[in-house]
Length: 254
Ligand SMILES: [Zn+2]
Image (cartoon, rainbow, N blue to C red; front, side):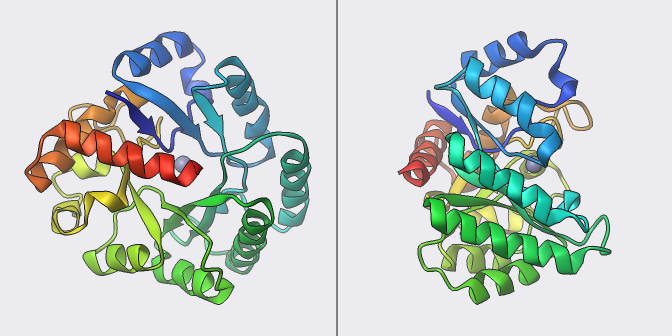
């Protein structure tokens, strides 16, 4: 079974000790590709090293994560532009707004998001959105940007049904991960009502491990647990979920 892991920070130093075994477990579990979101200039080297070591399997994005947006964000965006000119990336990500950790740089977060949406347009790429406690603020920027060709994923979607429907209406997919397996995750009110055509799988590894690994380090080989939960809600076989989500992800790559 071919699974596409659409969001994993496998370059994280938490994987340094058993990187090869962790990747072997993922490939054994049926994971065909692992898409890697970038955070800031400090994560690019380790991410690109993996992309070069596993060129068909570990595919990099480039972008500035909202939690890393500071006064000097324009320097970071310049670095992204330099990389876009010389290397191949599947998407601009992860980018967006985060009002959960720190609101100090909210104005800069908004500006950085809009500038990176413009980069996506220029390079004909989709965007991988990180939006935490900021769904409607993110939607407002997407609507202000008004680019009907802009597509992507609301990564680690954990919002309400209304929010899910809005994301879908804007042409975006929902990235579903370990939170789907949490008793208090809230996605039981959402996923049964959203078509499988709108979902993709992700772990956000090393974070947000699904039950029964909740609280431990997460890794791509756990994706079938998330897929099974979605299959339960949609009352279908897990193979259907894997097939659909892989199709949806591949369509983004064009
Ligand atoms: Zn992430």
